[in-house]
Image (cartoon, rainbow, N blue to C red):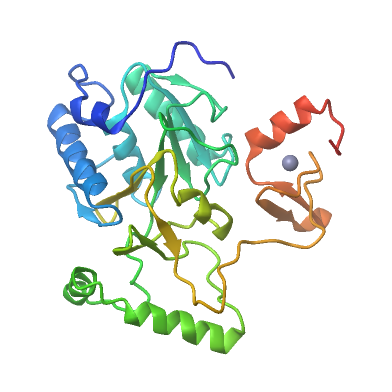
Length: 297
Ligand SMILES: [Zn+2]
């Protein structure tokens, strides 16, 4: 898929100064202003969950309505958008969201993350390194990283306010003692900027290090739970790990993609064929094109 016009720079200051025509991008101006305001607060306080008045969207809550609102508040007519679901541009959810964004804004679309100024994603970060003028928008089902250890909202607020994260450390320790390894495979909790524990949405552990000292801005939107949060560029994002038990990403010895041969990408198992393929479909496709179909390059 090719880009139909030039990419405009998308930065934090552009977010703050963004002015779009009336009725642009499905949301009314007041809604967009409010969401941008919440996003700027989120950028100013990395990892902190900022409440916002989540709007009714033409997708069900739980199907990317939070990410969609963030994208529609941040996007301008000069932007180029890419939408993925589990690394796949052709997923039903991704295709529907992309159509809605493109039709309501006139923004260009692409599957190539190097050409996109805004990448909305469910559960993956592209394999290609993202650049300073790119925004990653993550769809978040559960924004509260401490939900598994505490249900009371007031107590959760206190724990974040006082940086009292002992309960989550205890739960990680219990997991380790019970199972010999930390079993949490997706949405691994991280400490952002040395201050707030943050949920990494259900991205795999493979993607978590990409958030640390990243070149790009990451915006997280949870529509159902009415929260946004952010990781600005060049922010420390450290997975919670014990000094003597290192954080590890997924790796299966000997596994490689049956389509492109990659062993250095996040792979998903194809049980029916007892094999593995890249989760990032565009990356995998480009590797095959560039190597002219040869599986080992
Ligand atoms: Zn591949």
